[in-house]
Image (cartoon, rainbow, N blue to C red; front, side):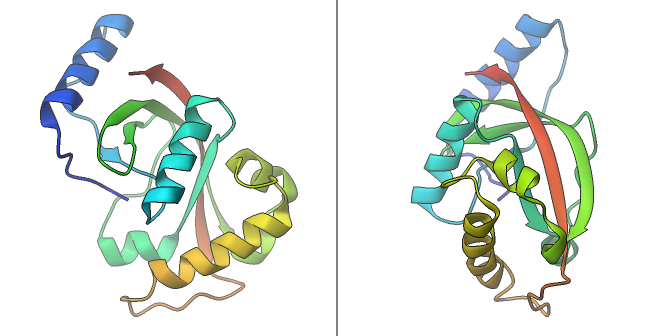
Length: 157
């Protein structure tokens, strides 16, 4: 979820630290947290920090409904916990649009959640997509297109 951080000074400090560490001159980065609730957002952020979570999957319908640009390889973003505290910077390494029913066990493991199985991934994401699409004109289906974004952690706050 895209976020307007409740702590813009911390975001600015993270960007400055990142720029210093990598000799960059970035002035702004997208800021977001994983999932749609505090427990999952904080758990996923912790998994990223541990190097376990290396992918995230949003429905293409959400991007269309929200009028958000699709991620691209090389994109940088700040991820936060549920409260908007910046935790680090990730870089997109791969983006593919894949139907829900074609998600593989290997990809589910990259998401790093639960027991990392495809069964677990399908169970929690099916429920998530219902919530994600609840106030849109879209409905979840086995064929719905998903934006499968792989990333790497490039900086820790």
